[in-house]
Image 1 (cartoon, one colour):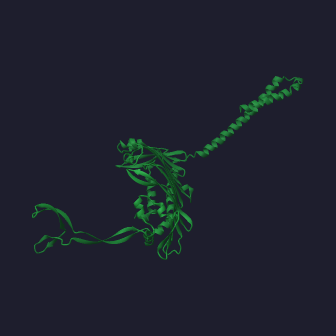
Image 2 (image 1 turned 90 degrees about the horizontal axis):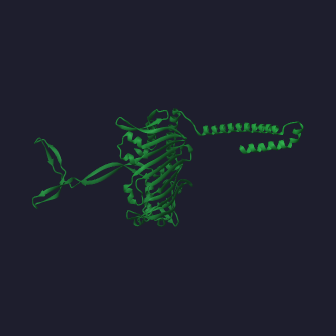
Image 3 (image 1 turned 180 degrees about the vertical axis):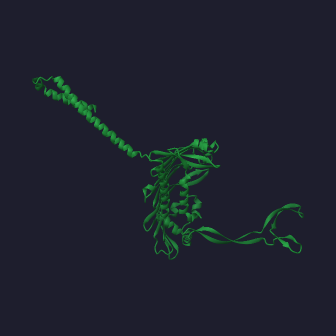
Length: 453
């Protein structure tokens, strides 16, 4: 602005210099005329400056109004419930997704009633004195039966006569389809599974090959390949091998864990396709210390229609960070992000350090669309105190945010000899958070009812 004012002044001065001859002839004082011109020019620039200032301030206020959305408490409650609903939709989309449906139908996972016969001892061992040897020894005492003797009017004991009794009983067991079980058993004809146990590691090169299921002869045909690829039908009645599962690469690292040599995976790439469409994939990479401490772990897992991204980092021997994000390709508003940061009481340099590991401070962030929960827990201080609501609240700090606006805090309340998690809204009112999560838990139970019975 100062620069523009100076240029205007210079322009005014130059104009006065050019008109000085005429002004003298007309009897006008050159200095007075120059002062008037400068004043008029500066007045014009001042007005422009004021207008621009108002315009800029107005634009800035408009931007702030767009960035900050102020809500009422009732609107906050609606937004919180919407986040729970979107999280439920995220889980429903996983169950209704292509991969979950395939796995459920392919495995035919269910409970079946199984009848079984077992033999057991019909007695018990008793430590008794043997008069013949003069020593105490264990003797099997057979179970007998007390029955009423009508002749004597008393209950009499009749010792058992059998060493074993046979018992038939039934139970419910989780089983998979017979066809899948058959394919699993037939793998033993072309794979030497003992090599896994012998070398205490996954021998990728030994198992590398292409395995093609021959439905006519109910066997696997194996050919050489640098990867591990299995092609098989999605059902026993399927006329072709419409499924393909593969481990395309694998690497590991030898670590010393409590004196034992253990191979930990540092890289793996896996996928599963049905009818050429990728329904599942996992790309994992990891870096471990020589003692098996994870320094960095990254995993990208796709379970159609959800994409999971997991990252774990050891920033120092006593500080770890973890980030988990879940993206729903069917609806971005369902996305979920979880961030954790843990500060430990001791550094993790070798595996035995896990025995004395304690978390001093835990920082936590949960983001669901535009709603987030941010908090810190001082576990070190809390561990030395009784678990009262007062002590918990003094050692924790959790805030609920909508966009960038704080809409409430979480607090623990002692009530009826129990502790409950309450939310205190920005107007000071509060209520039990169970109004949100009770129905949410019931909805999740309903979604996975088949596996929770």
